[in-house]
Image (cartoon, rainbow, N blue to C red; front, side, top):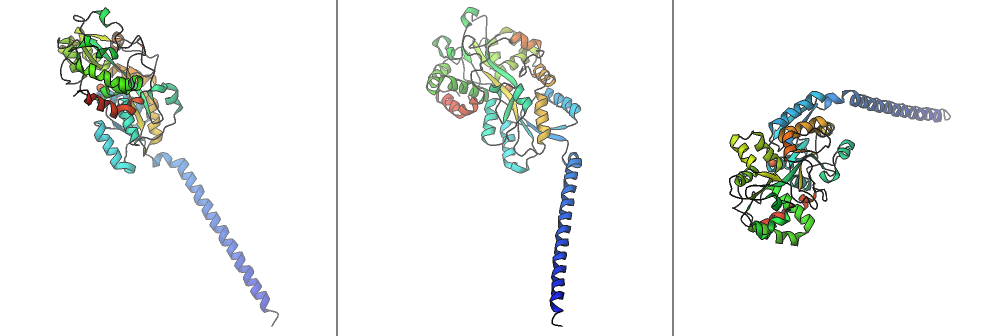
Length: 370
Ligand code: FE
């Protein structure tokens, strides 16, 4: 008897150990099966899981953009849901909704606005070889990408200013006494103007720009008012001699899309590209970035890559008269007429406009630019 107890305990022990090992093996098998099922599910059902769409937040107000998105939908099968609005309310919505925001792409006008959205951390870093290789460095950063270019130039009344007189004129020159009561431009709260002044701070420094602003504002023919087209209209009407406005507004007037009287007015003025004897004309962009919590990031990258393709670039510049970001595409006749072979200021990156945005507005106000 005394000898039979130990073997029973031993067998029990052996059984327990065996059961334990079997238990562990079963757990491992279940675990592996689950993992395999998960991988299988991911591989074959990914498309079913994520919707084939993108949600585009855009501040661009061009009907023609929607036609462009239709081309993208046809090409890729990815639906573009457009949510349009002004930059501030859209940005506010993105920030408030945070992780729950359905937005994938945020498309804005002006590098200053892109930079300020970036500062508020609405974008995520994007690493796309196509975007990096296609878009020149000065028109993008890691978070957003310039998709069209804008030139902010002068328009003059040829009856009041001789060609020889304007030859070689620069933004800096417009602070000289010679131009007293002759210049029109819109208000200081306009982001295009803030970007222009920011570029001057970046190039000439704060002290020089403060001094320049004093002379420049002193040369205004009237209190700043109206949009870019209103400045061109003022010169056409003889209320001023030089207007500053983006080229696509002038093209829009020339095209007749803004009515016969605006077309006639545009024909009375001449476009002039400043700073051709030094760094070149001030350039800006309209561009987009991918939002931080984008639910359809892969589709969003495809969308941005599409916007920089020759088809999209041709469409954009043909319809909105902006300059294409891509070289070597067929340029619209109206844009050609205004000028394409001018020297663009590539000496600074447009991202510097964001850096000086607040400072420039402060200096503009200080100089009495309403
Ligand atoms: Fe505009």
